[in-house]
Image (cartoon, rainbow, N blue to C red; front, side):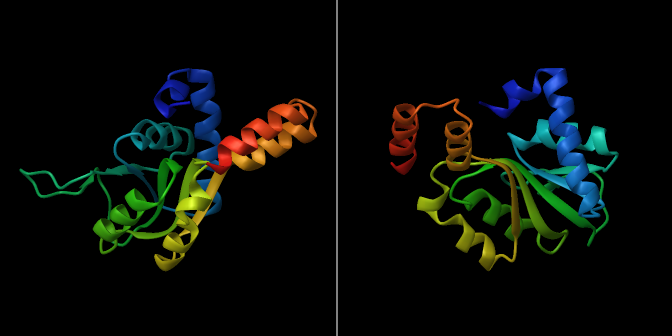
Length: 166
């Protein structure tokens, strides 16, 4: 599911925004920072639902202004990095390196972990950045939960497990 498709439904967007906003409040951050482009609608909804301001981190510096961060913020503010998913962690690493002198970022909040996360070993990459990763969904755990709840048959679970291991 693409985040933009999910967030285009106002009821679903409000639920996700409330969850992300509550996590932001618990972490006591002063700013939400989304990674362009897929996290922009996610961080905007979370901001509206939590009253925590947001910025977004561009993929490359603006040619005219030289800015990498778009939006209003104070240098050194404690920010929560937000993105739709984590796969290999490369985009998160790039974003942290680009804004590390501007924002204080200790946590990354993602909607889900890719089924390939373990293969790419993003936990080691994020640990080197001293970045705590919070994910709402993990595909492997979701498959196990659906099987345990009787929603997925043993055969279907094995098919998903095989696919997730690729």
